[in-house]
Image (cartoon, rainbow, N blue to C red; front, side, top):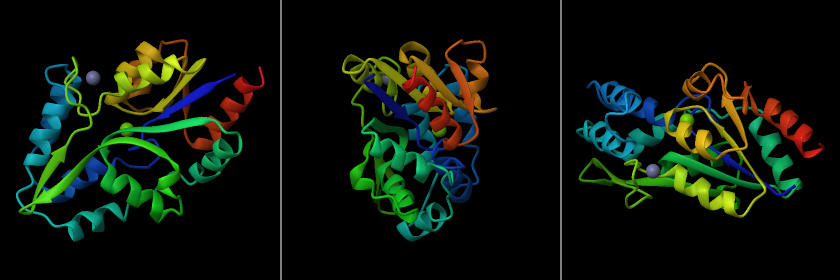
Amino acid sequence: MNIAICCDFDGTVTLTDTGKEMLTSLTTKDWQYYDKLVINGEIGTRAALVKQWGMIEHTTMDEIFEIVDRIKIDPTFLDFYNWIKKNGIFFIILSDGFHTYITRILENHGIDSEKLVIKANDMELVDNKIHLKFLTDNCEHDCANCKYSQVLKIKEEHDKVVYIGDGLSDILPSEKLADYIIAKRNEDLAKKLHEDPRLVEFSNFKDIQNFLEKILNE
Ligand SMILES: [Mg+2]
Ligand SMILES: [Zn+2]
């Protein structure tokens, strides 16, 4: 079976959400307010990210990396990643976060990010303010990086799509397009789709590997 694995990064590969850790450390303003608007469907993630990152008045790359370097990935991810590579399974990271920190966190854990396909937004510092560079020009959902459009393309080229995620930006692509939805236990995605028969909950990547080995042998 020709399967594709689409995998979120923050809170899924990492144990905590890098963006939220950065916002918490770099501003005292109420950035959580905009998450609530996204949950209520009042704004898209693109508008939310502009507002939230705009709250940081002044920062430096040293300050950013100091936070990023404290982020840990799931200790079972490395074995999972090696298993994926050994079996030649299509694997892509789809993130509403930034390339800058994703590659750094992977490298910090001994994973060569050049060997992974990563679709994410990016950022740069302009006069000590964070300037966002979105991957998606525009889409009907006002996404920063439209995971739905990415998964739609991948679905055309594979028999089955496995979607792994935890959060708000994972709901639409997994609910509409995935054959198997693997959701981090007790997080927004699992809560939202708890009645969906495609849903499998996970605690770590060892659970996910066990599940995938089972379906690949069916
Ligand atoms: Mg996430
Ligand atoms: Zn979209």
